[in-house]
Length: 257
Image (cartoon, rainbow, N blue to C red; front, side):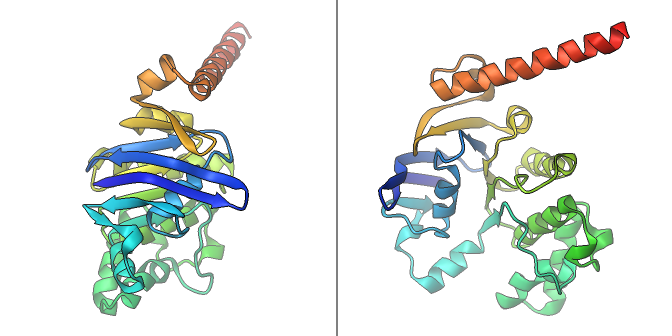
């Protein structure tokens, strides 16, 4: 479904992504993790050329996106859903109008676009808020509208660029639940950049760890987080153990009290 070959991006003297290679099978959910600044978001943005790569190729179903002209790229992007860190909703439009906009601009009738937008909002549990404007919605609800906007195109590939990064911790869970449901039904291949360890453990078919612009480890969650071979993997293992021990101590203290 997705094949990345020798992908490279440099900003001045900083090599953000260095000769990266990655393949994702149809229906697979792959989670990319790693420390801030390791190149995760740059990598995912290059897949649909929100950032232009310096070198390398990105194949979606055998088509190299890096070689497409503007019009062909625009059509290819309709097959690739993208959920941003920030919601990027238009404040003057209602939720359903935000979801419809790309469909209408792509040539669909308003009636067909409305039906698809409503179905997409239903998938993320937001159909009852279809007439609300972004200012009337919580951060989690706005991000769910952003997810519906991507789903409305019925994409074959979904790209998630730290979709919970801009949310208050109390709102993160509602977005993760939507993502888990989508991953469970495998309606699209999913590539997710996130720091959410619990989500990765629960949903990912494969974890990819990055450091300094390259992949340092890849495998199923139980392998990467239980028997890591990279320094980044070891750090995640220690963090998981710390969180488990902290939770155990807290529960023990409540029991004693």
